[in-house]
Length: 562
Ligand SMILES: Nc1ncnc2c1ncn2[C@@H]1O[C@H](COP(=O)(O)OP(=O)(O)OP(=O)(O)O)[C@@H](O)[C@H]1O
Image (cartoon, rainbow, N blue to C red; front, side, top):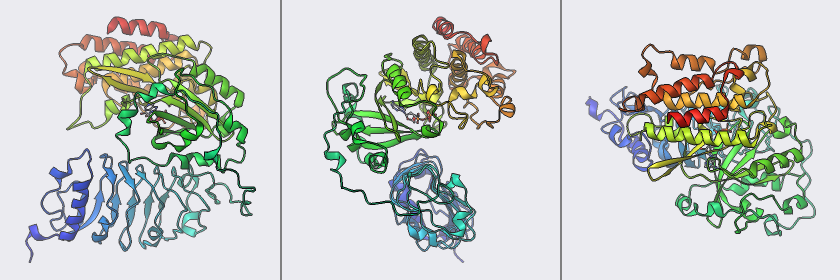
């Protein structure tokens, strides 16, 4: 009989070591994956499970595993039944799974995988769960028809064409397929066209070669170019995303493309739309109403492009309203706002182009990587962040007095934090879009839609932003993530379902110091300020909008405290 130590298969270990040795992550796999992966039916390796000395599960989720998965590495782990790399930063093609006949679960969602879904995935005889959502996969969906398939999700990719009409795939709802290319079709989404689309005639001059008179003044971001260029090699093809409207967007007319856009940054260097389309881009985030890209232009300049989606379903505003709103927002200048550089409108596409802010968003700074290896955010930094946020919001309130909620989407992921030496500088983004999104269709997609008054069907005022600021203050002080469960969307039910419960449970503690984020609790100074901020946050999150202070008062109090 083999001893325990030898009771594993070296080729399986070697395969796992390829990951350990080639992909950085926040889990220290070098320290955690030593010795044999399996001891009969147990494993000490993080994320690995074994049976009879064979590796059967590999589950590495949310550890920021970064880079290209070695494509063939799984081939030698022939007893594998479950593989999951959900919520990492893996790039390149999906792994080869040919011959892994025991596989029951393949979960690769929320990464940056590109290329197509390999047809051999449809030949895995025992597949029960396939999760691929939230990548950048292209091409057609293969004809999955495994009778045991109980979960399938390929949404939020760039897939196109006809969804194969198999019994297995027809069992899955719209949500398994939506947010892909416009031409992905089938009974689960929009029906496919009966006739093949006509060949375009005559063949137009390639759009890249057209004279496009669009100019964007981007010198403000050129200064950041050097920093971001160092990230080269990890970008998806931005022009693929944009071709959605350049080619298939039949309603886009050439005159519109050559129209001069309004520009909000005054410096001289110019840029055509052509160059924007050629820029390589990386997806920064996908929300219910938008996808946000970081685009690196040929000049090295970096911009952020927010592509608003679903507005044609929701928007009550016309092109004129969109232009007016963008003119208003683009002309706002404040050092605590991410500057809008320009915008683009076509019937199918609405783009807002911002200055790129080099740094992290506040959500990441507060919550990512808690535990070993985390860089803590001390109290001084938090006070300076709170002040910047309050200045940015107070400016918006003064500049847009007639707007319901001038920011409308204040939350920690929309606070961009740049480190400047020992100091932090924050810029608010995603502001001013409420008038363009007047629908209850996606009730969780704007922060003000979680305020008590909205949930009770009442109109939104500046006080809804104050409410969001109160939530943000509590998040900064307690380190707790605000309740983000989707609302029901049904007025009566959702009136009970705003974030008030989260506020109460967050501050409801017998020992006041227990509510402080552990990272600031240990600081020797500042406790009385922390509690004064909590008092202010509670006033800001009052269930009654009229009881909340005005933003100008909030700013004054923050200045007094800090
Ligand atoms: N101007 C910018 N500069 C740098 N990073 C940005 C900029 N704008 C947005 N980002 C980053 O892109 C991410 C995605 O933005 P996006 O607004 O789509 O996401 P979100 O905040 O998660 O969702 P929502 O659509 O509800 O605001 C943000 O979390 C932020 O970190």
